[in-house]
Image 1 (spheres, rainbow, N blue to C red):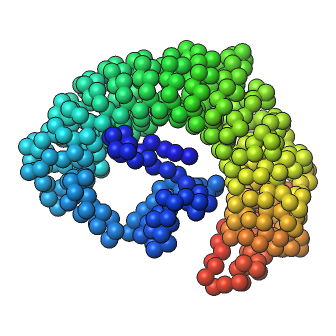
Image 2: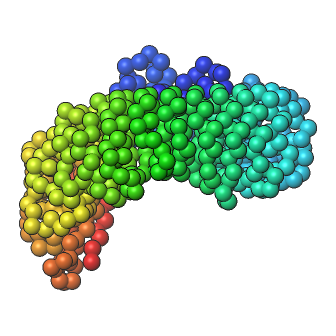
Image 3: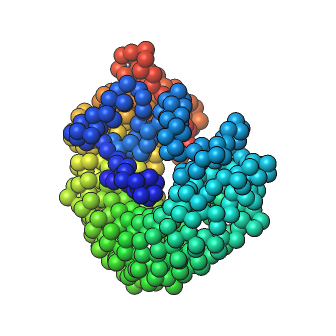
Length: 482
């Protein structure tokens, strides 16, 4: 998967590439990357369940070296007002302001030429800045990032932002402590590719649908009508579709890779059918997130994208949809789904998904009378399983099932825990590192819950992984559900 980087938005030929370790070993350009990882110069972080690292971090000493070299080459000018080292003599092209600014600092910056600045980033500013945020001073700005920097007073008037015709990235994430009026002039930014308004309260003007080059739009509110014009969109993260929205327009966004929205429960059934049909037209979709806890059985006829990797559905199905199978979800590595009526065959189907690394399964109905078990080859790639909302039996973990699982969240009956089956069952999980148990106390006494808690602790401490090495510390969290 390739992501647009801020440097590429500035006109620099550079693309941030998200690669798995397997990908890195197979590319020539990855040699330096893997060498840097091996020498601990950089460290991959936020590794998802499909093995992809979302970012890399560097040691503080390495960061100082990078900053010094960037400053010497005039690649980026970092203004730290704690150190008060403002190089006012040279022309900055990429300007990054760190820490908070006060009025004297703003006055000093008034003498700095902004005519060459292509990128402006402001970090952790919580004070009014009358000088630096005069957007008319930026003539060729391509990247404007004001995340976590609340706007006050006159700064809240953003009408002049329409004059930044070269702008490719606009980030106003979490910078509004009051509703912020997004000006209609934003529609003039015809070259804008990324618009990040997460955490911003206020309505988005209708002119935004004229920004046909938008690739990513993040806005936790309602979109105006006409989203079908945004045919370049690859990532769309919104709160929900408004009642005036024509849901059939969604099918025109054929380049979408990521879609996150709230299920419009107030819509008529025919409109929801149209929405599901439109979702089926998004053949390149890799991530789909639908929140709100409503019944969405209308999605029973949905046709998933063959490239789908991440599926998060907070809404409920009465039964497991027929499209949940190893053919339709062959690449899904992250799955969250809620099913009212779980059956034994549902676990068998989920266990066949070949790429599944994380599963979170919810069941609204009490399944205390159900008896679930796994086949010997179920969940071959699973790393984490969350079954806290499904009552399981201790013998659920058959020998050979979940060979790679590291974290488990379970719901058990105290009576079942007190049997000897639990000890033998979790020993069938050779990679287990962490387990959290919720005890179902509906028909159990407090005394049996205490005994079950002690039994779980004892069983976990006797697990072979706990005894194998003093450096392999395993964590056990026991929670009693009342």
